[in-house]
Image (cartoon, rainbow, N blue to C red; front, side, top):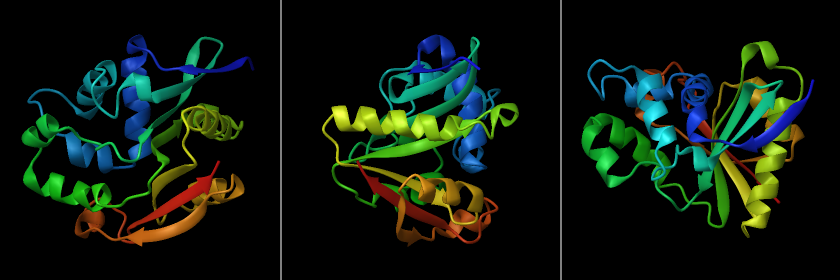
Length: 195
């Protein structure tokens, strides 16, 4: 294995988008399906990843590459930046924006929010997710931030165990009414770690 962690690039947009769909476990489809007629969630996300002016942008991504193949991604942004721009909110259905506002309202000052972390299924179990988080911590520290934070489905026990091993602690719980529609009736937890 010759694993390299590097900055995401526009040419990576399609692969990053597919990994973001995996990471979201339903949320990306909930938010982005039917936004653009004829385009699926991955298509919409690939457009956003290739663009420089939103939280999903490749400038906010690190990718793990093994022998030239992207096998993982972490997408992050300063917590005080909105996940969606005003323009993006205009083309989303009001129920989707209302759901997302449960998360926009949550504040963790001076933190970098991990928006998504995913590793290709055939690459899991090799420590790639841990390495991506470690590199995101280094980036956050260089930028003067004091913590990493994230929202995690409360029923995603494997991920929660990983994050706890990496020093993340449960900060709060959020229950948004749409969670049941997304297949996660236990809601979402907020986790954070100091860096």
